[in-house]
Length: 79
Image 1 (tube, rainbow, N blue to C red):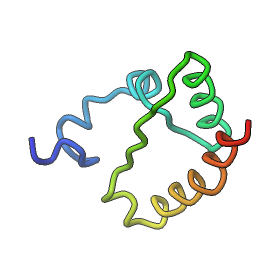
Image 2: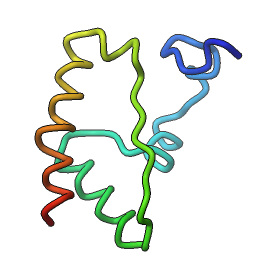
Image 3: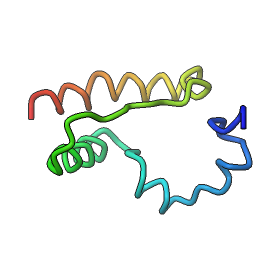
């Protein structure tokens, strides 16, 4: 239970791409912006944005965080 958020946990291995696409917002900035806009269009006024801290320690994780902060969030603030 202590490792449920790790990429290499047994639980993570059970996540299918379809399940991830249905329950998560993932992908390139444009795809994330579109999906978050759809969720806001449903009337949601609060969303929890969470990341994987172990991934954020990698170059790809830092790039993903930067893209989210510099591209996706500003686009959502000013639709």
